Every structure is written in structure tokens, then in C-alpha cells.
Length: 218
Image 1: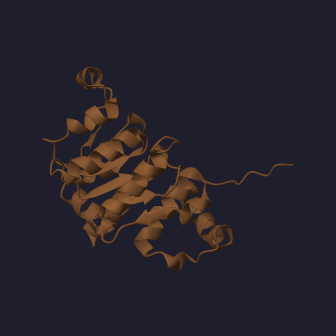
Image 2 (image 1 turned 120 degrees about the horizontal axis):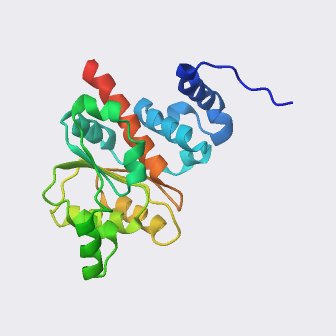
Image 3 (image 1 turned 120 degrees about the vertical axis):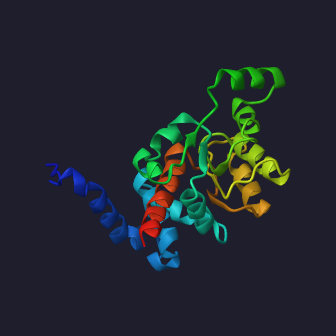
């Protein structure tokens, strides 16, 4: 017979985190202190969003990336996401604390038109429309073409994000785009391989927002 845990709604996340921490070493073969406390806070929220402990093997942080992301949030810069699903997963209550706008353009009529005229993906066209926006964090969870274009735009001096969260999912250029991100030397959080997705992108942003709130009140 199935026995359900009786728990109040306000304690569900806390209990989930407790379970993740209790099972982490057995599930991953790694100690929690293999990661910095802030890295583990992000990884824990990613595992919470996916129920996938194996992401501990593929998550990748560049040096200083977390501080860069937190600085961006505290300064009120815009968060850009490649799809509306990622944007919907980012906490509005937390972004409101620092007046961070969450922007997604892929469904805008002018973006669709531009993509058709130029023979590129809507995700690429949307990135090209960001050049006059104050984008501090780019969070890509779906489209490898968007991540590739972001890397190019930064290298060309057309975008200046503090942090790139590059976790596109899929079989065509998803893994490769993330390796390009790592090789670029840009400030980034990613997960190697084919896995990824909007829930992971949103979870990383939310974890950074939580850390920023804590730092903002210290």
C-alpha cells in the first residue's frame, strides 16, 4: 500500500531539499562539499526541478560566474530567456525585489517576420534584437541556435551580459553549443551533454535570485 507523506504546503520545498541533501552522496558519489556552498545551492535547486541527481556530473561553473550573476541581479539588469516557458518559471516575487525585467521576444510578430526574411531561426532573430537592451543575464534552455548567437554577439561586442546560463536541450547542436560556451571563456553556467531545458534554466535563475536576496539583506 502506498503511504503518502503528510506535510503542510509551506514545508514541501524544505523537505525536498532535505531529501536531496540526505541522498546526494549515495546518488552521485560526490560529497556536498565538493561544490562551494553557492554552487551547491544552485545544483540543489536544479535537482529539485528535475529530480535528476546525475546533473551533478554535468553542471559546469566558470570562475566568478555566480558573483557576476548576483551583481547583475542586484543592479536591476534585465534577464532574457529564449522561450516563454523559462520566463514563466522565474519567480516574479523575487525579480520584483530588484526590479529585474524578464524578457522573451521569440513570439513577437516582428521577430517572426525577421526570421522568415533572413532565413534564420526565431531564436537567432530574437537575440539580434537585444543589442539595445540592458541584458545582464541570458538564460537559454531550449534553442542551441540562440546560445550560439549569444556567444557570437558577445564576442562581436554587441551584447554585454554579466552571465550566460546556457542549458539548451536536444540532439542537434545542443551539446556542441554548450562546449562552445565553455571554450569561449565567457562567464557561464551550463550542463554538458544533451540534457538541459527551460526548467533547468529557470531553476538556475531562481537559485541566483535567492542568493541575491540573502546577500542584499546581509
